Amino acid sequence: MLSHYDIIYNQRKNYGDIMYELIKITEKCYYVSCPSKIGIIKVSENQVCLIDSGNDMNAAKKVLKILDENSWTLTAIYNTHSHADHIGGNHYLQTKTGCKIYAPTVESFFTRAPIFEPSFLYGGYPHKDLRHKFLLAEESYAEVLTENDLPSGVSSVSLPGHFFAMVGFAVDDGTVFLADCLSSVETLEKYAIGYIYDVGAYIETLENVKKLQGKTFVPSHASPTSDIAPLADYNINKVYEISDNILTLCKEPLIFEVLLQKLFELYGLRMSHEQYSLVGSTVKSYLSWLKDGGKLEAVIENNMIYWKTV
Image 1 (cartoon, one colour):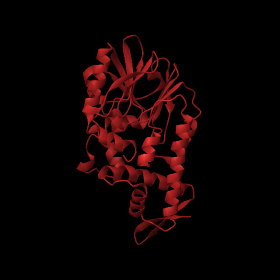
Image 2: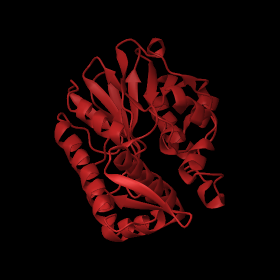
Image 3: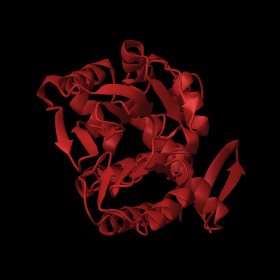
Image 4: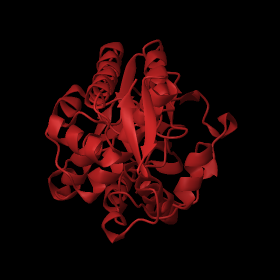
């Protein structure tokens, strides 16, 4: 999207140019460097589990090749959430290895029926320009994740906000996989509006992330770091910047389409069918958060809803 989604979409067009490199974090934890980082946790000498599976079958094939080269057997995939760039390799890997797949609550339902993602983002049945692997992964059977399903030494970390019930995973060696709870500075400087489902929950998650104990934090779309607080603060500040701009624009009552157009123009963004759904959904989430917080009102006139700053 006009955040990490847009980058991923552009990178997918050039898969051959992307180096799927295995990066060692500790003796127990690794990640595969790709558009949406794939975590690897050793659960025994020759067995591993994955944190997410990449964005499609091609990514899954490259990951499986890495596992084979290291004589590792895949036992399970733990999906942080159900966006296509994190579950796109599920089907291939499950078919090839018979591994189990787990995802948190509602995210598991989206994984079993991935048409939910483009339908939810669009707000109705998605037209053909939205029914592609960028937003629509292959179906895979994911069981609802419980703490009992996790390997020894691994626990889940609740990270709602970016999507319904997203989680990260903390490992007893100090590694913390943070999924999509924040974006890199470079991404936000270039694309500004990162996808958010629940703005209030997103801010609360980032405040909690700043308090997490760990040695290496691994966001899916930013560089690993030993100190996640500065990046979390940058993401929080960007949320408040966007909300302030919405309030400024809505001093003059605006219908949603005009507000969205003005935000695209303000941040120099390029409209496409994907961006209309992704950024549009995010802006609606901002409107809900600001309305519930008493900062915006929604006035119905002439069968149109006008958003107005209080």
